[in-house]
Length: 426
Image 1 (tube, one colour):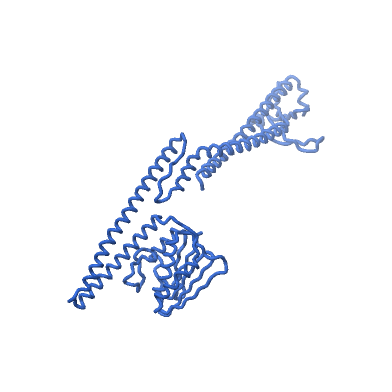
Image 2: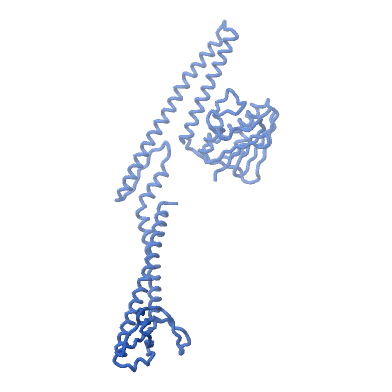
């Protein structure tokens, strides 16, 4: 999730939460105030009615008026002793409208000059109050929705403007490539944190470029410096082997030395290749037809391992060919290593199956036992019975090339066969 979307979402969630809480509190505050005003009206009306009753006892026999419903009921001294004035909501039946209408009720007690206690029950219609509350709630919801919409739009615009330097920095980082000069970063902003972040990114980019160049030069120099003494040593071994008077044992020792030096040369070249692949020094890319490349590689490889009498089976899909977008040299090396591995470690008289589809290449070859999938693509790994003259870097190089070309290289053991599958990553 993008930082802008994450910040925007969290701000909106908290705002909705707080606005909802505020709306509920506001509603009940308004309801409390309106109810309190209604109760004050009932108190005033009750005081007026009680004063009239004390001066004119005839009113005690009446029970209602046009706007306010009231009723006097004589009560005993015992009831009056524990009586408390109370307010509550209720409904009354209106015969004219044939329906119940909400009212607010007040019940209180008073005593006349004669010492008789009366209960006064006073009711006032709350229909207008409820209508007013509904209107307030409607306006509140409309205001709430309008506020949220305006806040959403305003916050989005503000955040997009605030995070614009971050987007420019991310685009700048995406354009950084190993081996290429660090491009200038144009990010005009007054935000201190973004200025410091941009400056730090440029400094780190320049340091990385410098370290990359130094590493590249070191690897090339080291490889060159190693190749020269190794070549000299092999040449002197060859000259020494041509000398007269050497015994059979001495010649055998020289042959072992020469073979070891040859392995050292191949190991040096392989390690240099691995480092260059992992450093992304093969930047040139193009579309490569896998079937066409296999057709170019197979004849020479089959001639080299003709003594093993391996039976080849090709299976091509009718769909468009498997196209790899990558560096031509690396892709050729990848396929060459996989095919050579399938031929070199095959059984005499074994089988080699090549299956290509629009998105994958599967290589199956007969074998003795499964390989260790955890270490298969690690450097210097050799399976059981592996060749002693092998550098143990072939599959490691294949795995690195696949990763650098955005391909997935997987291995499995299936019915006495080694199965390598090369396919496009999802």
